[in-house]
Length: 322
Image (cartoon, rainbow, N blue to C red; front, side):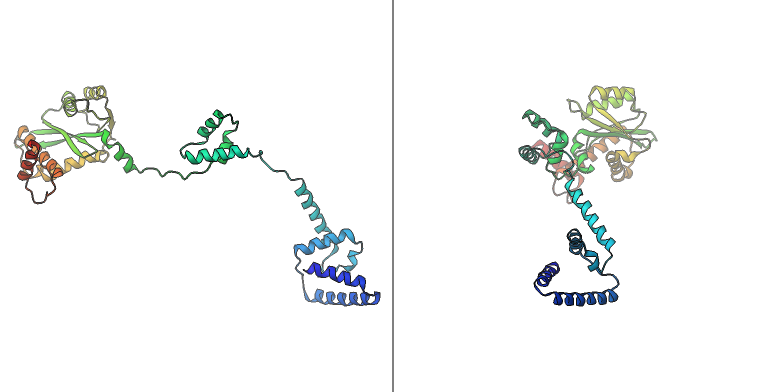
């Protein structure tokens, strides 16, 4: 609007007389002098700089009418405009040209309908359709799908728990101070003991035989978790390999890595064996059999709190006979 007013004033000056034009210029110059004394540095907009750069090319006497800035400043504005003009005119679009609209549309559609496909898979499908594009082009125009959240370690272990069993030994002294060794085999999926046995002289052959009795009819799991006890000798390792079982050995002195079977052993000691004296191997075997049968029945019955051990065992046996 300011520039429009100046043009209107210029048109008015052309139409008025010579004396009135001189008087008006004198009044305007006086006002500009007053403003120059009162204002330290005037603020100019971009449109003001464009006006003076344009006037520089049209009027040779522009320096005589310039008061608010120096002539060198106007010349610098003109040169800056010249640089910007040729910079914009000589600018080229960087990068490769865009792919065809149909190819871009096809890439977006394939990535949207097949969220698990990556750029190499989509590229192979496009090559089958005779579309010659690069993998970077496919990756550029793909629709970014939200990444699926990774499963937790708990979920991962639960998914593989059916293929994992754990085994371990614990000792129990008898009334005559003999040491009995108890061998346990535990499934991770249901935390259920599937086999146990008692011996006074554990060897690799005896331990391997317990492994066969625990999995008689091609029921061997995929992984067997155990510690570094010397009882698991070469004979035991060969038998496990022949059964298709992969042994996972815990670190040295790290019972927490086989936590499930260690927890079962602790429960057996606290709830059963710490409250009695074992006479011999047969006595210990019978006690453990009743203990495991009782807790197996507890898992199957609903009203556990009102049952005694004898009632729970008898109820379980009746249900099995029925």
